[in-house]
Image 1 (cartoon, rainbow, N blue to C red):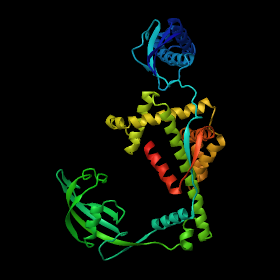
Image 2 (cartoon, rainbow, N blue to C red):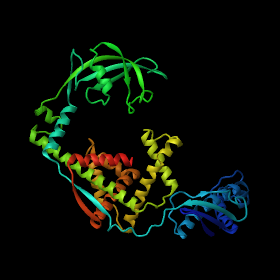
Image 3 (cartoon, rainbow, N blue to C red):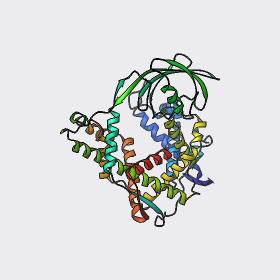
Image 4 (spheres, rainbow, N blue to C red):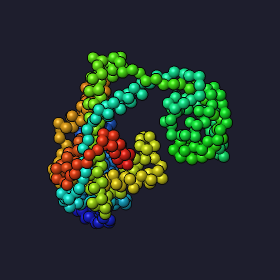
Length: 437
């Protein structure tokens, strides 16, 4: 086999492969001899079929199989011999010559990862959040838990702040009626919807009554045909309910799995959960900050376009909540810039791991899976599922590896402590997560 490599772009290589006819013929003959002992042909005893008969019947098929196998193995060998780091599967860019007879000649195009010099992190300046869970944070979470268990009692009065109101409406726009048939039902918590105009209109309508009002819908409104538009609305208040918070009593506490029903024990459980959340949010923020620093330090780093497009396609499908459906290319294009940044960051994190012999610690991988499994009723089954599914296991290993890289950088970069409150860290991590999505 002979191979030549041509640079057709900064990250694209064209492989020209030549395989002599003799190599193909030898493999075909070997395969045909094997078939003489395996095939069953009428008129011949098993294992005694003449090779001429086997060749006549199966020769073309066998050659096609051998050619396909040879193309795959020769490409793999060429990639290995040329020390290429493929970012995509090789793509044969023209019909091969020699499929039926003669020497086999073909060309294939492949994208490769960029070759990077040693990444020096000693001059990277990065802020590390320093925070702790306060008593106020525990109290706030306890209040949130009470809000989640709020009980609603119907009242015969106009809606006020904090009330739960069920409404039905029909809107008339220039484009037509919304909804086309029937009425749209919606539950609104007064003071929390973010739609002040709607809440003001609701407050003026007694339960059970309907009025026509003019509304200007916010740009973020859930119904696309109404978002950002003015419309005449037939608005009916179906019911108004007043909320009451549950007492933090023994029954309430036990409902969260605190067997002794003591307030102190519930607060301790809340604190532990918040501390776990804070630790995870801190890691997430540090990872985001590190990737941002790395990407900005190499603004001209080119990444494989095929990987970027695959990431943009995945992000588009995720945004549309349809991972099994191929998103429209126009939607994919909208994610290309964000995807490129994500791929660039992932490449640099991976390069740091490779250059500094950083690997995912098996004990930490198991600990991470145990943490995930602990949120389910049957942790043992979840553990087994992760270790039995290579894709799920790989996801956890990648996450742990990134944490290992971040820890290594923090030991070798210029790190400054940044005092932050619990809520600032959580909010910062959530914002970073939204940006990375």
